[in-house]
Length: 189
Image 1: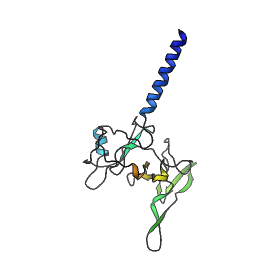
Image 2: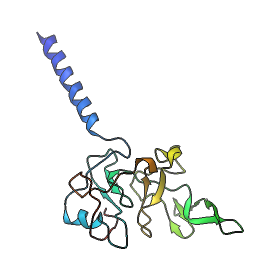
Image 3: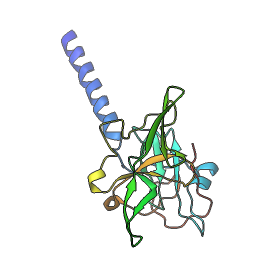
Image 4: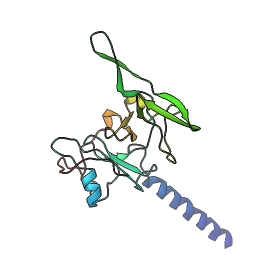
């Protein structure tokens, strides 16, 4: 009888573990932005700018980061360190962009600082980032995923999913598609 109880307990734990693993979306999986005034303000578009935000502590995502980039519907993302400086294009004699400069790296007080020109693009202290120091890139790099500064001037870099995975925008807190929004975009952390 005790073997039966033990087997039943093990089966229950395995079932719970599989159920929990199934709830966690893969990289770039759909997630929900909380339906709070701060999240609505951060993740909504204006007449002049597309909706772009990242909200932390979202348990839908393994990374705990759910974001909206350029009016794309919310998806799980993660911090990254860019391997190319998209703010420093390399141009040919005709002015056509042929590539981008690589970041420079230097030690400041024993800490590595990564810069694109004068802009510090290092991983924030205590945060888990990917980049040139690490063997992986943003998942889907071969399909067009990039590491980008989501809101210009913030030095907050996150993985942007490949273009073939783009969906329409989503109203915060609903998880449903909606192509209209109304307030100022920003990075909410």
